[in-house]
Every structure is written in C-alpha cells, then in structure tokens.
Image (cartoon, rainbow, N blue to C red):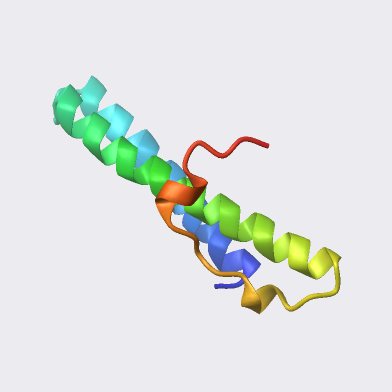
Length: 81
C-alpha cells in the first residue's frame, strides 16, 4: 500500500467510525455492538498510522518505503507519538 492508499483507508475508517456513532445515537445499533466495532476500527487505524509512519521514516532516511510492513495490532495498539 502506498501513502495515498493508506490515507484513503484511514479516511474511510474515520467515516465508518462516524457512521457507527450516528447509528448508536439513532438507536440502529446498541452500545455493545458499537463498542465491538469501534474496537476493531481503532486497532485497524493504529496499524494504518503505524504503516504510514514506517513508510515516511524509510523515505526520510533514504530507504525503500515499500519495505514497510503492517505490524500486528498487539504491537502497535495504544501507540503514542
């Protein structure tokens, strides 16, 4: 995935997050369903942001950004800048 594809995926997941919150507010889904789906979205977002950081760092230091790989959610979860 290149940088534009990663950013597009992030944007789509943020839109999904908004839809989930709207669905909860309108009563379409319950809180437990929202939390379960949000949890997965957050893990996926963490992985995308991590991949984007890896690609940018590799580019900055003259390495091939295509060598960046998606790391397991358990490794990147709760990552803080």
